[in-house]
Image (cartoon, rainbow, N blue to C red; front, side, top):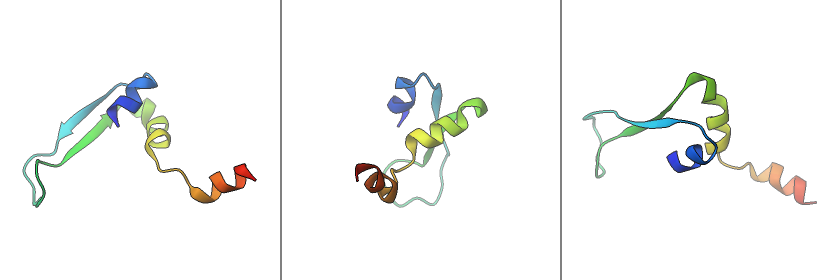
Length: 58
């Protein structure tokens, strides 16, 4: 995800959320961006809506 943002010149960093109740491997983390880049980052990292993509193909 960080590479996608970097490709669009959106600076980001990974934040370690510390020890929490997490039963997988590793520790939970978050991706932080500047508030000015928040909406662009959300759009870039959000899943593609299948209904919209199907409508554009027809």
